[in-house]
Amino acid sequence: MKHLRTSLVVAGVAATVGVVGVGGLGIAAAASNTTSSDGASSLVQKIADKFHLNKEDVQAVFDENRAEHQAEHRQKLEERLSQAVTDGKITEAQKEKILAKLADVETKMNALKDKTPQERHDGMKQIHEDLQQWAKDNGIRMEYLRPVMRHPHAFSGDQPPPDSQAN
Image 1: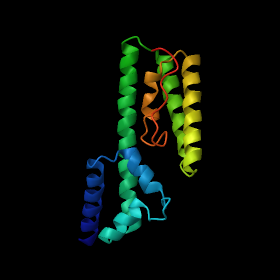
Image 2: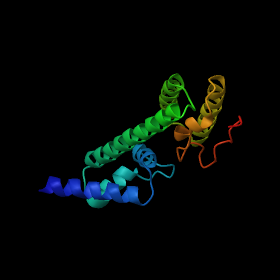
Image 3: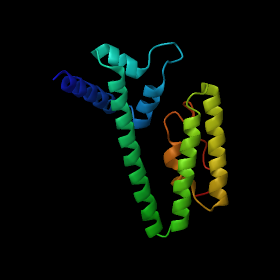
Image 4: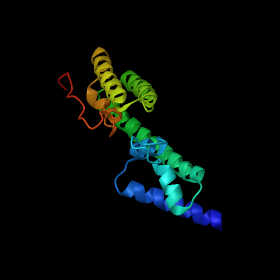
């Protein structure tokens, strides 16, 4: 019974955090940090402490939530790209290139997570510039590459630079 109560509390807390506007990526970013710049415990640790839960159980809920959001996001992206192929806006080959490139960008972004804020900012800026050049070289409009570049922490609070090409 205690395990059920713990699972329900953890699920309720995670749902509440999601409802108040912290998106899946933001939750994952917050949950994956072990400490913040002021030395405070991670969000996962704070929730575990506040509700007297096992930190690993709380982390598992956050990880599951993140995986669900990523799968949902990927599905919507693939549907949007398939519609663009159907509408003749991009080719099937371009769709496959976009999906591969976005996976590559995600890997590069994940590599920045343990960097300093300035290193993350500089890294994201470089990723964005490289992505713009890649899109131009492949005849792909940036609008099809926006999902990954709209990550809430992608530019440390800055807005992404405007597209360098006319769309």
